Length: 145
Image (cartoon, rainbow, N blue to C red; front, top):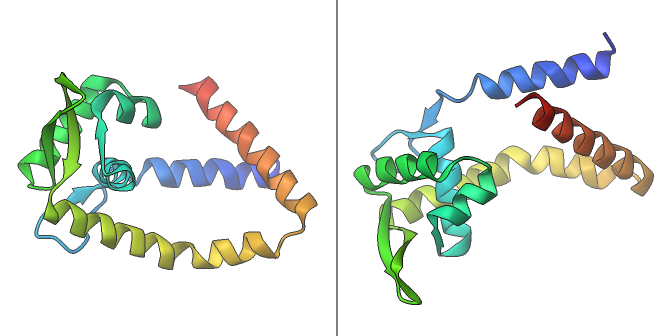
């Protein structure tokens, strides 16, 4: 197997094995990977509809609803009525959810600083090759789902 493809496949396996991992992100509850990424989406936007989250992360509305329900139970998220459409609800972060969001952003800033430095050090041509590879890798994953 090509060494680049092998490293890519090992990376995918490593990522898929992190689904059960959790951190507290400065709170008193365990927050799983799928949960913190929903918190990230909500925190980035202030509030968001369940259907928007579903489209952004590529899972069903039912799955997102279950995640949001768990986050509500942990005191991280609350649902509020959309003033523009009383039949829809928006997910919004509580103060505890904002604490987790900020800790997650800081975590990624620290963890990704080295990768960001590496990417910035690449020439435009090298970045274009990397971008093409990642696009093709993404498409490959989509084909296997």
